[in-house]
Length: 295
Image 1: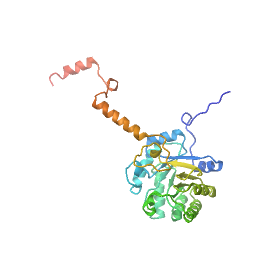
Image 2: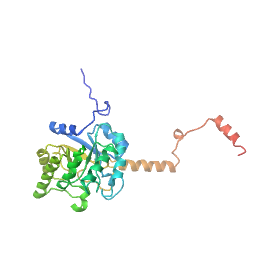
Image 3: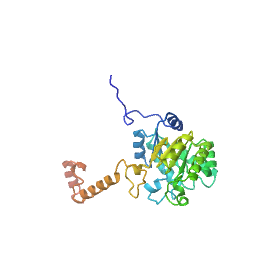
Image 4: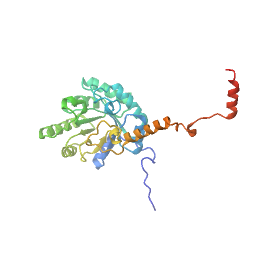
């Protein structure tokens, strides 16, 4: 008797991924998959592929809105894109990235803005950057019933403080502080942690030391899961490609070819062709000409 494997794209809608799913996958040693999305069709495609989680990242500031970094991104920007993603993805765990200055001013403001992601953005959880200095905000947001994903290592919202987009935790003292921050965020109630641009052996050590799942980006294979910016994975963002990115396609080149082919077709009048055109019957055309004879 033969067995048929049903892929995520052909099966019925899978069960909703939750924060509990994350914990269970870590316990079973099953890698967690995560990608970013900022619009409806991308979210739908990622969800259909069977990816566990979608991050509506403030990286949209760079890869969608064209900013130099993530700092100019507002709550309104994030909510606009979060709603589009939530309409496209029904099974993945949806995480809204809290933008710069949406949680740093006060815990009250942090809770209010986190709540907006769930209430107005259709998200299941939020992500915020920082370690011990964010413990009170994490505690307060979790206390309001909102799941929080932490983010340690290279934290892009602190790009000026860090002196650029630089790897973190490369010295013994910095690594110790990162480990401490991971424990602090776990104790504050975070359900998982993103570890970005930290040494692989440190990321693996932290992953084994804490009970909550770690999601790596440029942090090696020892994390409990992986996340990439979808525009990097697809080769859509040409300005620069981080070292830790594996490009699975080159959509920028494909788009460029499609656009130049279109340009050529229009200029040489190969497009639109007959098959792209609506026509009316000869009888109706004759009637039209009669009706407009004296116009």
